[in-house]
Image 1 (cartoon, rainbow, N blue to C red):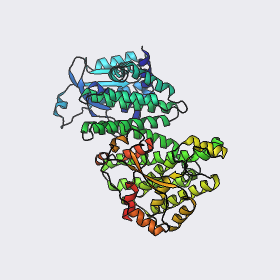
Image 2: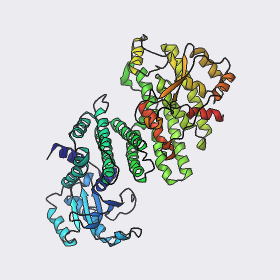
Image 3: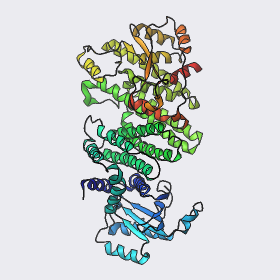
Image 4: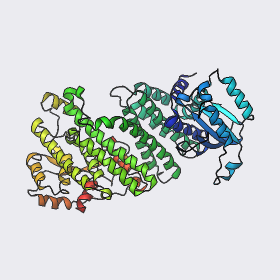
Length: 565
């Protein structure tokens, strides 16, 4: 067996039936050319009668069948004398699949096809049950009506249709895939091998018709699933979160570049990638939020002196991820198209976020200028008028004022403001030595400019005067605007950190009176860009892009709220 097959077999043999094997197996069937009629997910909670997956496809002789696949994994991956005859065991599943026919009047050809039943298990048939099992099959089925796909068959199929044919077809992909698995849990690993691996898959995709499209998305989904699997084994889901975010953003950039956003087949496959990402984020927050949301839950006592920097860094990153996760949850709940359900979910989400912020003071102490991104994401999430509660208004008001207090505390005690160029090494050096590094820059700020403008919404005259007197002296206030004229901003925001794509609006002096400042801010022009991404229902991806690539949020996002006040 080749080293590639060993990797595949090791991975497949450890899959659980629920959510893992159930999810992964349809990817294989798609790559093999089967037409899937029903999956285990679609019939979840209902009696499946030995039919986790129903599909139409041809066997090795070219004859077309209606296939009933029954999946057994994890504790039932091996067929033994115990699970063979147990309730909901192997024998019972096979009998139910045979005795209960599946019909669908909307697919007439389906009802006329001969049936083939397949037991799929990522283990082996134990020798002590083999005679009983073989005798049962020979009595119940004619030749060609039943198959058993074990770990060896699955390894061969995945190697042929997913890995060897596409993912590991070239030496460079093979090398990068192995390096990714080796370094996946290494400290400070930047996942460069994984990112290059994903890039190669798109470079090999010249056309999008038929099998090429199926293989591309099957590969991307499989990569996400494998990273998710090994991240869980390593007890560190950060790798899965990072890699899935890169895949989603890279794929959407590719869709925009080729103007595929209106192709239904591609959007359908893209939603599968989003669903995998949702499973990853769900597992991450299910594991971390119960601890993060207790008092100072994001503070690490083992971090010692580093926590003056590490605590706020951790807090703002966590908030950004949490906002996106909430939007993902809403995205999939919107499939119900019931406004009351969506509103109920959002209110629960906001309550959880309030709990997190109130218990972690680090969320109020920005130390990098691009901490404006999670601050704005939080502000915009709570400012949606569709389900705005007084509780939300009270919280977001207290939060913005808390940010001002946090800036004042750091300025007074540490003698610094957030570093403009987001160089964390300089912040650490300044914090550790109490000596300002020569390169440290806080003479300009976008964060402070944004906070000042938001104060207009709250009519916060006192806070404006405090800001003006204590924080803005000799500071060049800036606002970054995207240059839509010379760049395809929408595509590029999903591809990389933007720099030249922005132009900066600067002002060094503030008006003396708050009323004059409000008038000045409200008079500022802004253009609301019509994003193709939003038009297709994926506005949440812009949240992910800003968080992942640390691109400044565009002024129209908050200025249009100011204009309405």
